Image (tube, rainbow, N blue to C red):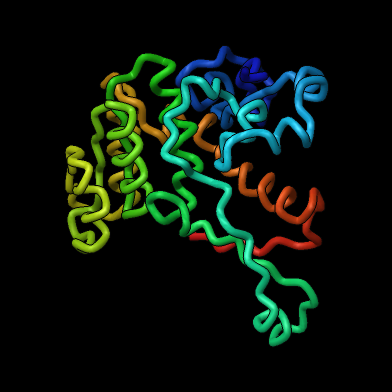
Length: 236
């Protein structure tokens, strides 16, 4: 079961129901998922997690949706690889690499999209959508196909073909937009208010964002329930 109780504005702390919305009506701050921490503390243990599936859904009780409704293409629980030679070259005694390209569509985006797609289906949406330049589009198309949802993917018109093939194989509606990614994202922001579509990185964003934390949970578990001293995360 999910212990999510509400959405809360990061800036002014106003709370909202668990609905497909992502921005505070009062201060325009971002909304984040709130959990019943006491309930989690009573229900979740290392042992209960270890009995779970070998995917990110082993942390279902720490996520904002119910596992029995999951749009699950087996994302997560990717390898944590000890990189001895690279560590030696960098002067680091213990260096590990988290290989998220082992996810079903070859990127960490599967972590966030599986949560967004699950919530979209819970909310009754029939269409999953996104603005993307590649990896997110692939994941949205794959999850929509798995869930029996329509997929609409908005991309810059000059995006190279190699980045489109991974989405096209799932037969989404591909919409090429004249402009860069920011232009595509602005268009999607307008469309999200006009059409009953679940944009994973817009009206599903509070839930979408929750998928990323499973990477941290996995690293701690794979290190024998120890937190790493430092994390280096590539950003785009």
